[in-house]
Image (cartoon, rainbow, N blue to C red; front, side, top):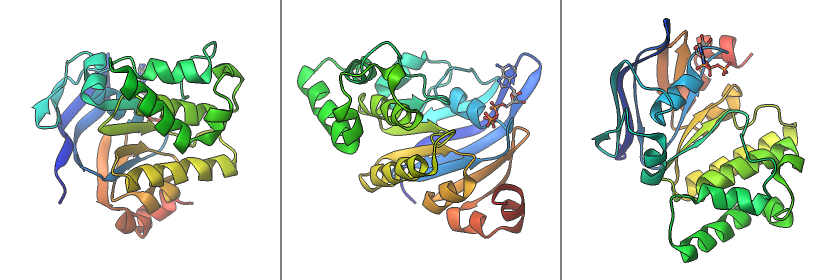
Amino acid sequence: MSKAILTLENVDTYYGKIHALKNISFTVGEGEIVTLIGSNGAGKTTTLKTISSLLKPAKGDVVYMGKKVNGLPPHLLTREGIAHVPEGRKIFPRLTVEENLEMGAFSLKDQGRIKHNKEYVFGLFPRLLERRKQKGGTLSGGEQQMLAMGRALMCDPKILLLDEPSMGLAPMMIQAVFNIIKKLRNEGMTILLVEQNAGKALKLANKGYVLQTGSIILAGTGEELLSNDMVRQAYLG
Ligand code: ATP
């Protein structure tokens, strides 16, 4: 078992009276890809938002690198190495590709480090290098996803939270995004991946958790979940 980077311990999160997460517990080990799967409204996005402190759990703890972090401001968590790539990308449409990347490095002071990270991102995503002077809003959906991932990588993250990175993309772009996730894992990045594309996510994942109406109903290795009858029927259709 690799060292735990992130652990959720009996987490409950609400939106007003809506009980969105119920007693969620799981661990992400260093260098692992862990995936959360489940239907619309199961609580996947809420789980990521609770980890990055955009939502505060009513009960339970988020433990990152051995420290309880629930309740800390989100920008401090980014500085500590938790990078959240939100659903729908949320890039800055009026800024250029390069300026978007620089925004991702807001927590870094060292200009040399920022330059190094930009070169790393351009190496991973040559398409972004070609379009570095282009406004973010004029990129295709797949390119915007690459930009959102690239921007998250600018702050030297220890863990990437990816919310539906393949959503709304053409099949070739979906494959490109999954290839990048695989490459990042091979380079040692730890990734918590939320995906509706359960088959592709489970093929990559070390571990997976199935969420249903706010609870974890099933857990296993990627392979175990891929061959589980309930998962096959409900999510691999
Ligand atoms: P999707 O794939 O559709 O994004 P999800 O698994 O990510 O689904 P969440 O977005 O986490 O699901 O939603 C979990 C539950 O919380 C749902 O019942 C949803 O309606 C509710 N919810 C989400 N955001 C809010 C909000 N801002 N206010 C009130 N309820 C919300």
